[in-house]
Structures are given as C-alpha cells and as structure tokens.
Length: 95
Image (cartoon, one colour):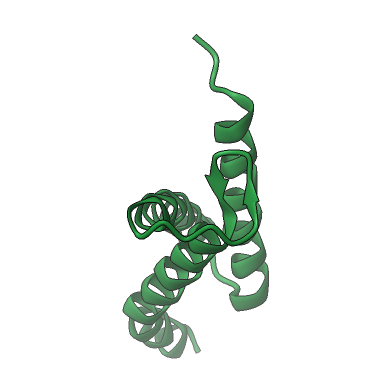
C-alpha cells in the first residue's frame, strides 16, 4: 500500500525543513539524522494539534501546513538546544 499524496507532500516538506535547518546550523551526519527525525515527528505532531484545535490557516487539502510547520520548527529548535552543548564540547576537544 502506497502513501497518499498528502502524506508524501508532508514528508517532503518536513524533510526540506530538517535538511535546511541542518544546512544553516551545521553538524555531522548523525546530527542530520537527528534533525530529520525531529522534523518528521514535529510535523506530525503539529498537524495533529492543528486538527485538534481546528486551526484552518493555509490548509493544503487535509494537511494543516501552518501548525505542522510550527511543530517542525519547535522540534528542530528543541533538538538543536538539547545537542548544542554537546557539540560545543566536542569541537573544543578537537582543537
């Protein structure tokens, strides 16, 4: 069974957000994987919360884009903040 077009579009949007965030912030392949996972989870949670709160701003079909992108950004910021101290210690140790 193939995923529908809404699921595919959401997955692509979340992946672009995670990859773009990694491009801006930087890091290794592990951090890219973390940002992608955080973006996917945040996108799904944001979409779900948007549905529960009935936020109907810029919907694309059944996909609630604005709440989903907000969830993505929150998840990416949280993952960055939780790993920033560890990455700073790692870079100081390599000098």
